[in-house]
Amino acid sequence: MFSKEESRLLRQEFWTSYGKSFPRKWILYDTKLKGFSFKFHFDTKSALVTLDLEDDLEYRIKYWEKLTALKSILLDDFLPDAIFEEEYLLENEKEISRIYVPLEQKVSIHNKNTWRDVMEFFNEKMSLFEAFFEEYKDVIED
Image 1 (cartoon, rainbow, N blue to C red):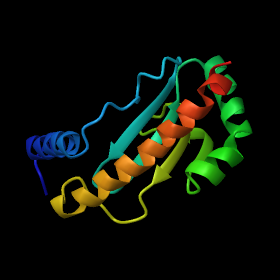
Image 2: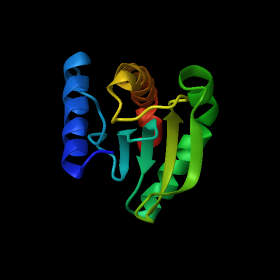
Image 3: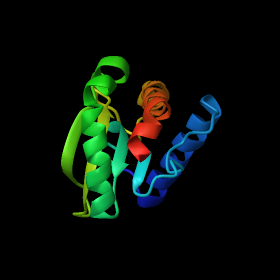
């Protein structure tokens, strides 16, 4: 069991290490689309790469409809293991729409032995998410 401070330091070490191992500028929050962001998630039980639709319900619906229209392209050409959830409930009870790819193995940010697998997973899957976004950005933002 780790104290909050030990856990915080491990998280900080992971993200610093990830940035050094895979140095590149990710789109993430800077998509230029309101409520439309890419995220990395890594905790004591799982790792995910996500495309989250948050904020204003009107934008959420608009983007969700466009993304579901592109679903077969995303699945066939980029991320065949992507999961679409129109109503995804976060831990804080906030409802968002999410498309995500989970890492299908047991990992923990507290276990440094799993870090390399997570880093490689993040790099591969986020690169594919971003390639999809760059290719279809005009369709999504119309």
